[in-house]
Each structure stands twice: as structure tokens, then as C-alpha cells.
Length: 212
Image 1: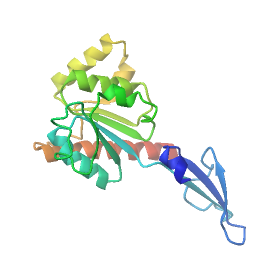
Image 2: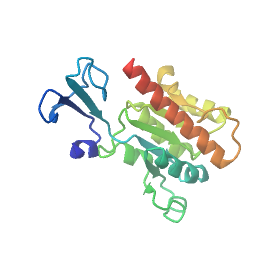
Image 3: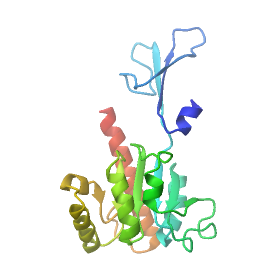
Image 4: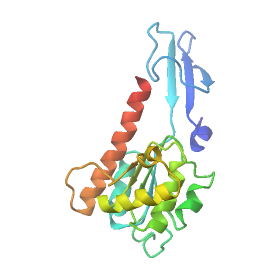
């Protein structure tokens, strides 16, 4: 089980409560038809779904990321900060944070870093050379949340670049821009709170929709 979860593969187990020890587990590829992590009405089976830790990619080792990364970790996310600019992405500015000093497309197009349905991505640099590469990588995958920091004018220009690159409105509308819930945030820490709140909202809304 641990090996599968480390590879970001969900694990679905069924515990047969009619056995003497109640520990007869059967591994399945799909969730049980009954709601996971709750005993079935007949009291015979306990379906258990174990999901990989949700992952959050932060594109840009900027000041907002310095607040956002530790908050997201505290909220239960596996956080990776990606920025090719080593003057920004260094352990002194991001102690105990997973840092990758490569271009986002090099990292995100690598099969070792899957952009799966349990992953969110937020771009924060304001630099199209860095942010757009990450957005393009994410738009081709089933990530549950994509967001980009910047003003509405900046986002409008971003959307136009994506249209020229061949993306349609359905693709572009997947991007939350400007990133974060509208809580009238001003400081970097407040903006980080708004972004994390939006990520959590997207994740919980998706999980609720799946269970309904």
C-alpha cells in the first residue's frame, strides 16, 4: 500500500467484517459502490479508500510563495516550488521546502512528476516565459485546480497568448485568474491565504461532487 501511495496511485481496500478478525482486505482498482470509509448498511463490509497526499506546485520562488508554501504544508499538501532563478529559489529563502531550480516544463513534463487529478498548480512569477510553460503543461492534464497570479489585465494578455497557441475557451476557463478568493487581500501573506483557500475550495468541491 505504501509503495502505491508513494507512486501517487490511489488504493481501494475492502474489509470483510464477517471474518473473525475483521482484517480480510481485498485490494480493488476502483472504489466500492458504497461511500468509502463508512461501513455498508448491512454491516458486512468496510470500504477504505486511501488517496495520495494532495500535491501543490508553486511556480515562482517569490515572496508570496514564502508564506504560501508552509501554510499549504500545514494544510496537508505536498508542496514543491519550481523556479529556474536560483537567486530566488534557494534554501535560505525556503527552508525545509522542496525546491526545484529548473524550468517548469522540464519538471512537469517528466513522468516522475505526474500532473494527476490530486494535483493543483499556481503560477506566481508574472514572467510569461516561466508561468506560461507551467500553464501549458497543466492544461493538458486532469489537475483539479490551475491558478495564475496577476491583475485582470495581465490575465487577459495571458489568455490571448494561450488562444494564439491553440487553446480554446474551455481550456482557458480552467485557469483561475487572478488567483485566489476575493477577500480584498493586500499583503503577501493575505494573498497567500486567499490562494490557499481557493485551492482547498476547489479540492473539496471536487470531492463532494464525486461522492454525490
